[in-house]
Length: 215
Image 1 (cartoon, helix red, strand yellow):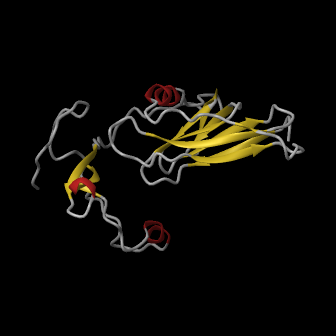
Image 2: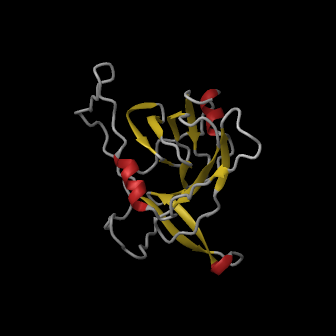
Image 3: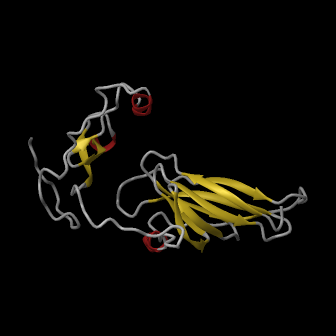
């Protein structure tokens, strides 16, 4: 409806891919990410991390028309991702059936500058009602390294498949759903022995090649 403002709740349900979200000829005002209020900023593109929720306000400033919506992956490394683009259409009430759709190009898959600008725009609201209070005392110091690697796989393309780990711990599919275990207070599902630091120290921001580690 022209002139009205709509609240968009944008959720990235992808397994391990950051996604760009864009609407042709429209800007959005980002106001919240993962239940935290932000200092509002306007943008024509939103970047949403896996399992992340972004709240944005969209004002319908045209009187009529159809406008393409696109969601596309962001990956600035050589790791292969699903490069398909999801599309939909924003259409105004009362438009004619013959109205053509205004198209929009998604950002390039490796649009690092766009992603960096969006990340740098995320700021706390820091108002009198919502002050930005930063903890001074640190109770626990944690260092998590997120790594990608290749494991040999005879049945996979090129003989390898991509694996990911945090502090040399890979994901193990639980036999009991984690949310069920939390809700029903099921013991033996959660543990507090996750490593607080990576087992091997190396240049965490540079290219280090292959690092051997045997527990």
